[in-house]
Image (cartoon, rainbow, N blue to C red; front, side):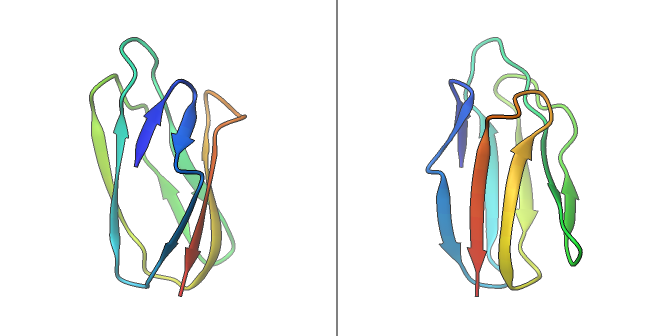
Length: 81
């Protein structure tokens, strides 16, 4: 998953429980902070400096939204079966 230009690319992913994704900050000078807040699943990558990556294993089925704590317009919807 690429985080670049203050958006995620792509903006929707269809995956299976147990899959792993890697979020990569592809910006040259922007810090990102990916997180998920949901009843059944929470994730917080912390601040991601340019070029840094973080891995997320999807353990719960359902639809979850990854947001950026720094750029609120950045959203990625995960559809996990």
